[in-house]
Length: 288
Image 1 (cartoon, one colour):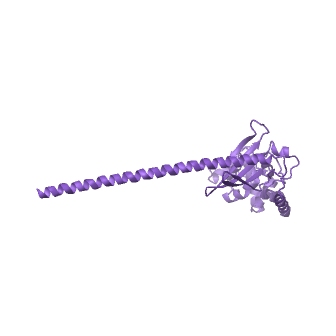
Image 2 (cartoon, one colour):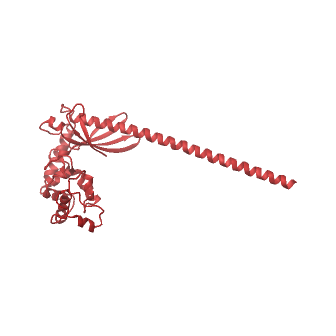
Image 3 (tube, helix red, strand yellow):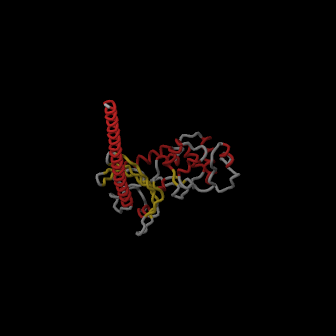
């Protein structure tokens, strides 16, 4: 009888311990769920605040590049401006896309110089220039330039795609071209666009990488333009444009924003074309 009583008490104790353990696990799970929900909510609020900050920076940039006052108009050659909003600080660089080589319009010789300025030898640059032109060419897939690449060449190298045989839709598409490495793409990216539709660039607003390709035979000219530009920016002078109205309407700009807020750094780039239409003053071409 006594043995049976001890056994019953032992099982009761085990049952109580099991119940206590289960309650502890439930409490821990509830606490973790609460913490997770709180973190998700804080992240959502933080993202919403950051989006508002980016929107404010973007709006400020569009207003500033069209300001008729020389002392207030922002530069459009990639030199950053400081801007503060709602406790956040930003560095905003506006780049006029007319200063970049259009990937669909640039000629083969200039493209070769651009590739050379990015570090390729003359032979490698010539080969890759032809390959890039083959990608955008609307000729037959069975034809390619002397040093270019056909569909069969891509297949032989194991690529699961072939040349578009049409205009590049974005500069990121260049990474699909045979021979373009991630490192090379990063070197070329600042000098390229698909938005200007021009065969040449505007040296007044061109990035250093584009200028060095333009003046490949004499890089000192590029360095001189950059030095003059930086000196003008230090004195608060706007970009030297013959007609500010033309710089404001019909042009495409990349607004690059570095946001510092709530202990974090975020980066965003928005490509916008100004229309001159009061009801729809700009069109977003890319958002990254």
